[in-house]
Image 1 (cartoon, rainbow, N blue to C red):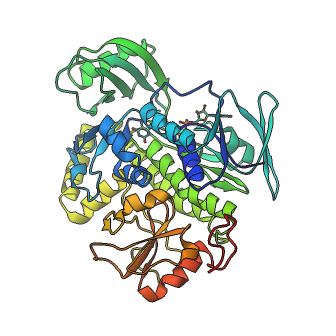
Image 2: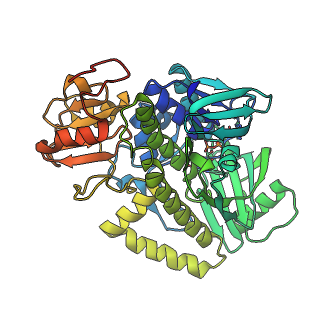
Image 3: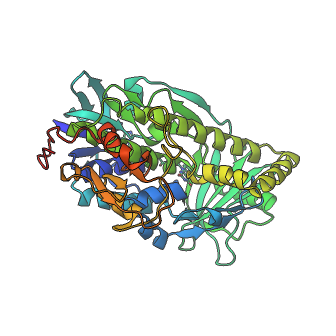
Length: 476
Ligand SMILES: Cc1cc2nc3c(=O)[nH]c(=O)nc-3n(C[C@H](O)[C@H](O)[C@H](O)COP(=O)(O)OP(=O)(O)OC[C@H]3O[C@@H](n4cnc5c(N)ncnc54)[C@H](O)[C@@H]3O)c2cc1C
């Protein structure tokens, strides 16, 4: 029996596989496609997703390949300065989704993940001990846990029957990949009374262009997109050689529960939202990093009994917040009201001038401000928040996190018996509490005085004397 089977080799499934494999858990990914995806949907990676990828050593390669934008001029605000974010990645990184997927796939393969194609899941049953999957060709597979990362039309979600509340936007988005002659790159989004047009660079002279219009017509996609650009942007930028088209209907939906027994949902299988704001893949990658270490801890036998349920408790509210934000932005750009847009732009500009307003808006768009409820009363205010990167005696915190373990930030050593779950690191810029326990996904599990360390370690990482199924450092 497999430890974990992941259904879907998109970004969320591949990231989950990487997390499990890093923790030494054997996992298999099954995907109905015949091979790697060649189609790109997402283009934007935000700061928190980049930080999380940095915690696994993958962000800098993406930044080197992509187009980092420090300031963007979206349709819903005059300008948004991601450059003001307090992070190693103060940017919106434009990088085509298949580039991100390639990197994740390479890492998963390097870590020994078995990725099987032409493997469509058609049935799922579970009991208290295991989950069984049946593939279209009749093959039966069993695992202790299954992760449904099979996208917006998830079969896994349907089979566990957790619902997918919400609806579809009434108007489709038209998309095309075209050449645009080299000159000043067009703005990412431009809005008119007819709707919104979008231009995203692949970085090699090709662009993804899109039009989301308030009025639907039966015209051929390319003609309609060009006309929309002429009317909304005043020019079609000389776009030519269309090589790909799609008519795509965005949806706003969320699974009622991200867990059903031994089955978990990540990525678009759990939530789908409007592409305005560029959030879907970012959220899916972070779901995966939230779930991976928890599943691994459970399979290793040292997870506290409440840990697996925190996946839904932490990620469902984030999914809801992202859905509400992207829906609000979409309503604005498709409102057709110049007045409403102008009022919103001015309101956003005023808010972005104030510290709290800036933190809230940039923090939500970038994902940096999302925090998780502290596990227990009387917690330090940092508990549940993202851990800020900073130098330690063993490198930057996000470099220390690359082992996939907890990190104890303190001048105190971690007993040998715990070293396979917790790495010690002494902060070189002591500004916070005396000690902090950082989770493998880069969030603060606990912070406080040195006296509280042992209790925090026992709560999150299990008692030190417990026999460790990995066989290392089994006794204190
Ligand atoms: C136009 C557009 C623009 C976007 N822009 C952005 C952006 O800028 N930033 C951003 O973060 N997000 C963006 N998104 C969203 C982003 O593309 C998705 O959120 C992301 O692809 C979801 O990843 P995933 O791994 O959850 O699912 P997917 O990428 O959909 O992968 C699911 C996988 O599951 C497989 N599968 C499905 N059913 C089965 C089955 N029964 N058995 C086996 N395998 C199965 C599929 O073959 C597929 O490989 C955009 C989306 C669109 C449409």
